Image 1 (tube, rainbow, N blue to C red):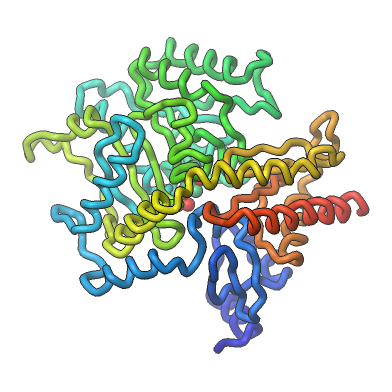
Image 2 (spheres, rainbow, N blue to C red; image 1 turned 45 degrees about the horizontal axis):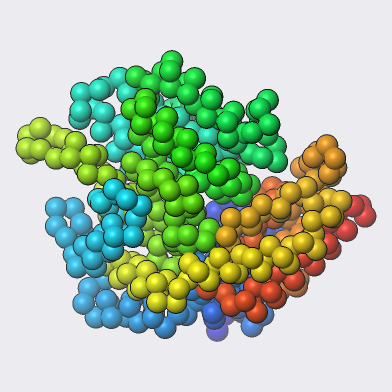
Length: 451
Ligand SMILES: *Cc1c(COP(=O)(O)O)cnc(C)c1O
């Protein structure tokens, strides 16, 4: 047993946390998790908290799930890891088959990696090299959405557009075309229908530049950009434009895949299949770092040829196709099906939506956005003008600190309070978590306004 103070001292001395201002972190009594139990996390002093953001949008069934624990143990009896470069392994082959079976139509080839950012890097290299291999070498640029987020590596940041995370690195990035996202709350277009405006902007760009453009990348629900679902029909429109102008469509479902929005894939809501799909987060149920980039036969075929043509995709990571991760992912997908998780999410989402009615008239709640169990509550200083609070107010954080006092761990995106419970949370658990969420919003805002 380690004492709390001792561990925090060692944290201070040795551990540098991601996306964390370390001074701020140590000023606020860090949480040190010792174990998990179902949908709860338990710190080293035995305090239990609801895992209100699924350990950063990953968790599907909860923690210490017997089926997932067993799958990893069973795989460990055989082997933990061997390379996928030039050879294969059993769970990686079976997982590729399973993913191809459940993927949107036409995505038949699976390329593994270890994180969402890598899945995106691979998608970008795949799209770029597809045109190189097929003789259309001018098609080398990417189109992305303003406020998009695709991970933190340099390629993924080059197609990202969140100023606080990305602006600093601008000189290191390659240029991409940026189209304002059709955000209904903060509509960037003159048209009252933001999807119409955005599709029009994409078409204008394609008319001028399609012979320079390899692919367009989009999130069906902008995640880190503030939990902003694309309007219905937007992906359908993008698919049609990409077909007309011969641009590849990359859909990034790292956050939205595996049931998060109430369907297996968010692009199913629009009945759309991309040319390239990136998945990660929920793939192993939130257990182990496995991600994947799925591609169509057309793309795969462009890389297929004689050795000396050098058309291969020169990309891979040390742990690509890791057996423990793939075995866990297989068990996760089986459990999603057996426990009818997708139907369950649709039902839980309705419960959340009803409970959040309590906040809809709050003078500092500007907008409540939801896609399945992906929820964002945008706090504003002035509801009429949608004016945000000054940055230093830290309204989003204040709500999350209140939630922690009430027994739930949350992490905001600026002044958007994010709630993403594990998909398998029972309706009772969802009710309890949602009450804490509402209380925390009330208390956090009271603290802000009282100041
Ligand atoms: C989280 C996320 C990523 C990055 O995934 P990591 O596993 O954190 O690298 C990429 N795209 C989207 C849409 C995400 O939400």
